[in-house]
Image 1: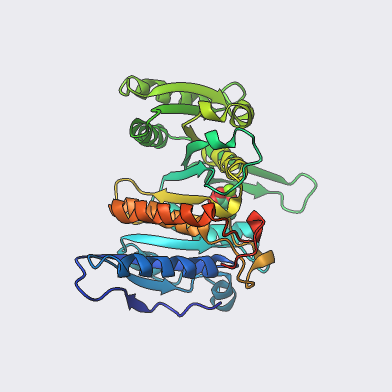
Image 2 (image 1 turned 135 degrees about the vertical axis):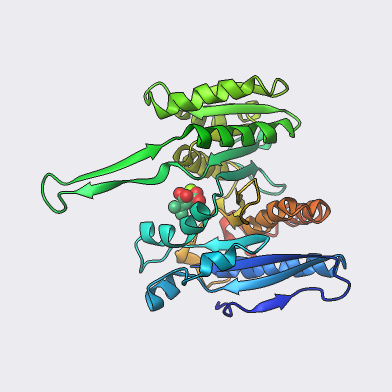
Length: 355
Ligand code: IPM
Ligand code: MG
């Protein structure tokens, strides 16, 4: 499916009172397909609510564009993107461009430049979806992933290229400011949830510098949040706890890489990677935030019209919440649950439904 280039399309012209300006980037693989399904959902929401409107601008930033022009994001692209209220993103990843180039060329270029340091990944077993765990119904987690530094800071290099003594380094960078702001974000989030529990996930037994800083800053902040129940888990041990005692977890905060891994586990335990949503937030709103399904470009099923759009729909729930459209967000979540409950499933969930 091809997406028209940067064109404006205003939804619900009649009586619009709140019009949100969204940048829409389909990207690669199934990205454009699920994003277009998401646009249909926005149109439906807006049709049913005269006060709610979206002005969409589509961008064809993708690996195809990179191969054609040498760049994912054209000159001035980021500055233009900055003016939007939010960004809806599909996926990036193609057979023609090495993964680390596509990732840094598009997704991380936006996430890092817009300081979207809080990556929020809810996990829950939707009605009609089966968890591989018998206790799966107890899964109701939010993984807070530090999204700006750590193992993804881009610090490192290669030397002695091609020689037997070649070396590659990858330095995880943890700053007090970076650690403190993600912990504060996680505490504030945990405080708003019924269980008010926050689990700090690190590996401070083996990694004695950055991870110990994570632990220290967490415990300093905990004193300011006496209403939040906290505990600490090593990243290896928390995988077992996610499987064995899912009810004992609520909000988890972890580094960029650790939470990347944990969120795939969380998605699989919730029944499918195809339904998992994510928000890359700049909580201070100095920049727009980016919302995307976590499944990636899934090149093996691209173009077949069978990609699961639920990940994108749930992502839109996060987007609407961020824009303060809580009523529309709740209505969309109910609609998603009605569809999954009726077992209208795409093939990844064992069904025959199309996107
Ligand atoms: C994710 C993805 C990305 C990441 C990939 C595509 C590089 O796995 O969003 O979880 O590791 O950040
Ligand atoms: Mg991942």
